[in-house]
Image (cartoon, rainbow, N blue to C red):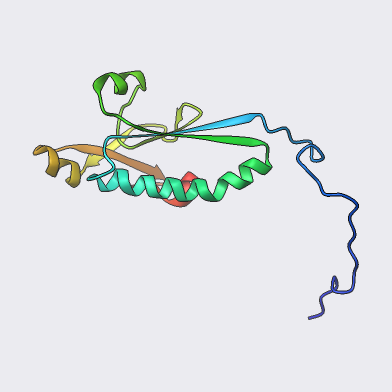
Length: 141
């Protein structure tokens, strides 16, 4: 197979910047990660890892598109904090204040049940007709 671009000369007189592309970086996207525990709860810990991996991948593309990403990781340490954030279930991911899930579904969480000594339910994420204790990368992207 012959590379048809091999012998072509490409010259540029200047580099493009965001202004040349009509991009003004002033749009902001806020991502809030609300959780109860990042030490014991496998769901919270794993969701945190998946979310950070996805944000690492998509942040450069969002920058090119003219968006600044604001990431807030908020531990629900008090009842007042939970009330202020209208916190319904752990873990919760919100984009610009909106929960990424249309409804709150939960199932028994072994980790949280073990530390509390009682049955505790944590969030499950619905994606493409299936339920996940940890959201898949493609759901968050």
